[in-house]
Length: 100
Image (cartoon, rainbow, N blue to C red; front, side):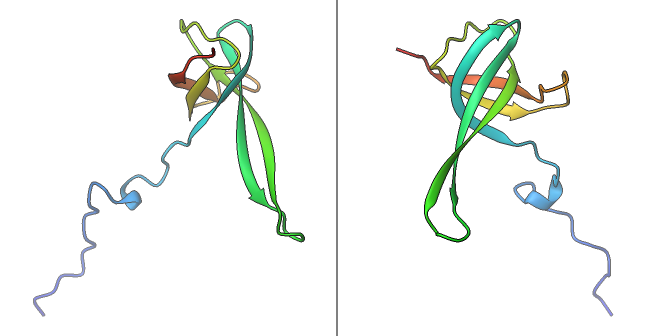
């Protein structure tokens, strides 16, 4: 009976160590007309359940951006955060590509 019944400690790279990991998405800035808020369009490709055709769906995420000078057309990375207002639950982490 040399084996112990205690659970093993999860490895640092294991996802079970942090089950509530925050989501990260990439998208294009659609609008920056609000103060400290950018509307980011995230495109997801989904297979249609009946016809098995790939369909594009666009989600509009309201993201917090403090002092970053964003313009429509910028490609950004957003991360999930606590609710900041009625609709705003994301924040801009970094600007991947500037609009031309």
